[in-house]
Amino acid sequence: MRLFMVFAIVIFAMPITGFGWAEGSNILLDPDLMCKKTRRLRGKMAEICRRDSALLKEIINGINLGFRECEFQFRNRRWNCSTLRKSMRKILMRDTRETGFVNAITAAGVTYAVTKACTLGNLVECSCDKSHSRRNGGQPQMVNAVTAVAALEKQQSVFERNSTKNPLRKGNGNRRRRLLKNIKFPEGEWEWGGCSDNVNFGFRHSRVFLDSKYRRRSDFRTLVKLHNNMAGRLAIRDSVRLECKCHGLSGSCTVKTCWLKMPSFREVGNRLREKFDGAYKVVLRNDGNSFMPESEHVKPPSKYDLVYSDDSSDFCAPNVRTGSLGTQNRECNATSLGPDSCDLLCCNRGHRHHVVSEWVNCKCVFKWCCEVTCEKCLETRDINTCL
Image 1 (cartoon, rainbow, N blue to C red):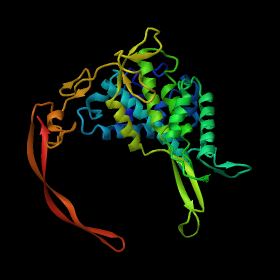
Image 2 (tube, rainbow, N blue to C red; image 1 turned 45 degrees about the vertical axis):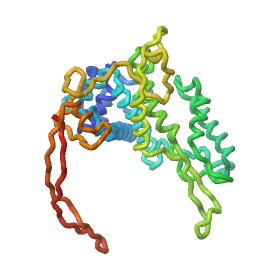
Image 3 (tube, helix red, strand yellow; image 1 turned 120 degrees about the vertical axis):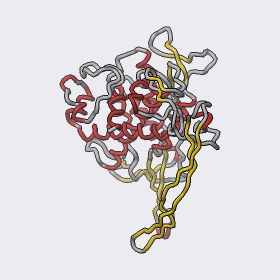
Image 4 (cartoon, rainbow, N blue to C red; image 1 turned 90 degrees about the horizontal axis):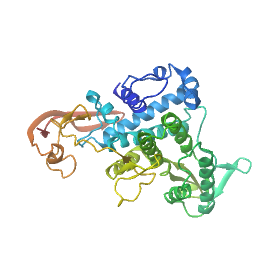
């Protein structure tokens, strides 16, 4: 239930014409409720609501995936991606670096979930990306590193050229070179095969669903939001890798089949958390249509970086206005030097130590076939909580 509440917050944190929901609404959202007033929707988003409940389900799965990853990445920090007492709603009403991360991981989650659904055959309108694997009358395509790079560059060039109002058009040659640099091609010839992840399909529908209501706006908040959404998608699309499998007698590698695969979503979360730690504070340029770093001595952020415009709370004490829940009674690590240390997490207020005893499974034995039997052992554990 909490995950669907967050879905509502992420999508409708800003006013949306036609739905009549207040800014920051945390209405419990499901596909039927979200698309109830589809007569007021237009374009691709209306098509998804009216005709494609399967795609809508995967979009919601992706947003939930993003939020679960947010909880994991910040589980040991003062801000832990919590939705208690409307905290997330308050966070998303400002342009802090926390808001930037939530927007980025949400866009990445939708891209990932929709792409994975294509690979698994759960969506009728897409499947694996076979644009490289079947040519010459349907025969397998044998390639090497040079021809594979040419094929990938051509595919990405076509995708970018066909994207409506594509924000990646400027500098897309550099972006393609970065994408290809991350792929390690095997030596010699190999066959495009397997089931390549159709990342472009997931990328495109993430943009349609999360960005479409904002594309005609040019206010500062919208520029920041769309930038962070794009950074989340690029964290997946420009990190695809080549996986290969050998075929032949007795383990030989007579034929090698390779396909493109997304990184694990945990890897994506790790990368975006690093971008969160190095996020750029930006201000609006005089032209009113772009932003720049607040400090003139800082290089401009790339499309892969996260940006923000408002300073964050320190999250030490509860604050209804900013959404801070404070860190009182949070468990901390007395021996750590990281953000979960009792000094940092407890904001130097001190902590209390106590010992708890609990029964756990131990001395487990696997019995053929197929049972695991365990004994119960009493273990003690040191617990430290913030004052």
